[in-house]
Image 1 (tube, rainbow, N blue to C red):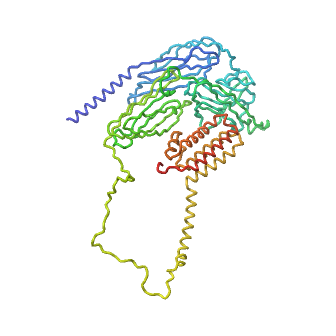
Image 2 (image 1 turned 90 degrees about the horizontal axis):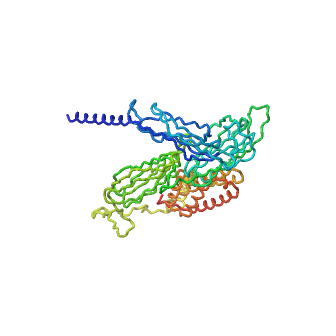
Length: 619
């Protein structure tokens, strides 16, 4: 009877929850708004238009933007940061949905433009946003004259144009075009850079990138896969048909405010078909692009205190267990998910009396949705309670800024409570003379039998001593086994030396440094600095006996300090590795003088590493 009553109460509770969810889903509210980051702009500059729809109890079917024929659409992004569903099967309902359409527009001429409201269709019903008025004034500087590949009436030109969001030097045979979708992002906001190659005739082979587009002052992430087909699209520029190839596309995040620049790329190409028998093979063509300026803006005031994350962020804090014995370690994990440069997420756990908090282990997983960069950053701390009782870890809060809405928010986790039970047990120090050795010693039994001395030779008299008593006999007997032992011992030592990871890494470091030295005279700065970085990594691994390729810079510094390396050598290694990482994006590091100086510094570092003896007890 009690069991039936319990089952009845459970069924009633489930029905009540479903009825409550259905009533929440039936109450549908729609909020649709259209905003612009600025409504008064000069000709030639870009602005950001956003259409945002927040729906409670429904789903956004589509968003119809207003007529934008008076503007050039530089980029378009669609994001759905929040969608929650409940129910099962056909009864599944959308509880909350948010859809954001972001456009980067550039006006073509001065004037006053009335943008009607956008239409948002939700569950078959149309909701219209507010209208906007965009005032475009004249620019003091002349409008850029570089040709736009999508404009069939673009005029030809043979002189470089001023840096801007779209830079190219027109050539009737081949030219390079660099496009930045947002030339005035906020610090920490993503802007997408695309490098195009335009050729009159098809490419005979893959182009050789002589000089990569530099990105000093940015953190960049490649958006194109490592291996792909180089497909062309047909576009008309200045009345001439070109084959347009996408050579590079990467996301660039400004690290500081002010005037930054995407450097000019340089390529070597060969055009023409392998089966073209009517025209002679063309010579190699070298083409160089033009730099493109990026004006990184500071975040709008007032800026919240702390490190502000630019983008969308969600935090989750957890512990592997809530109750432990005093002295045992608890793993506290923070998972940060979102869109943006997640390397900027660097929270710290507050120091708490009675808790010992070790440095975190950081793991980054960079993901991209189309051209939008995001991912997951995971931080793991080891927390050791040193005193019994309840210890409360406060919530972690990170201020965020959404460039699409221009508003600040805060991503916050829940607080954690760790309960430690039992008193900590101190381990006695064996070197302390005050600690007595209480190990019992066993005395011989009083009536135990005794034995006389063991005799190794006979008492019988001999005329001559036996041969086995001579030293030469035993030398000859031991010579054979000793020879075999030496032979197999040396062979085993050679095999062990050949398979010793430390020696293999040391040889690899010398080999890579020699390979870098061979690239001194070539115009391959990126390959040179890559070999130098690999040589340093192999040398460090040879000394400490553990791989460092998957470590972040912070983890590498912590590992070297644990092994007993002094801070001066750690700082020199960190600075040299940092210089190598950014060398392929820096035009100032491509000179032979800088490479020679780099080799000199690295040789000194390798010599210091050879003298460094790691602390084996801390390993």
